Length: 267
Ligand SMILES: [Zn+2]
Ligand SMILES: [Zn+2]
Image (cartoon, rainbow, N blue to C red; front, side, top):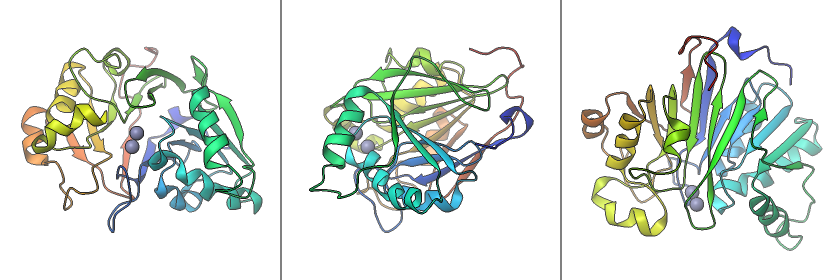
């Protein structure tokens, strides 16, 4: 990785895909890329867009879990590595999720090329070359999921997907005071009864997490593909509860500006 220290500039965060479950005409399944850092959260079908957007030739993928909508794009990275477009791909996650990827997604009967990746078990703290520190917490979801937080000296970001937002959720302490929270919102409030049984979230509890944890901004993602239109969960109503809410769409980039917090307060 050749990118300069993140402290020197704003950090771009590009949504490669914003759908859950399956892609639609409008959106690919979930993946979020920090192109200057060579860092991605998850690898859904939107990973087809990664190689042309990633600045360097090294990539670290932080997996939340191993459901297909979050990992199938790993197979799209094989040819870029073989062509030399990506020199190194490191896939980081829980041991059980990495095992599922290696044994099932890359079973020869499903995909005939052994992945030219490095698989690394998620450490308690992962230091990034630009100075960021990644921490995580396990979150409830069928098969288990992982929520992430990255702290730099003067700003912070959290990525929470495939879990149910509720008061007292274990990940609330992880996201407390974060500058930018990327959170799944698979369902609108009209589909609230589906959230708990599927291990997903619906709108109002997500907004309440953001408010309770005093996050700076909230970006919603991972929408149920059956929800119609560019405003699947109701942005206007959301902003009545948490004004600094945005709905993400594919290829949208948001910026994490420097100096969001006083420097030196690394959580
Ligand atoms: Zn998902
Ligand atoms: Zn899932």
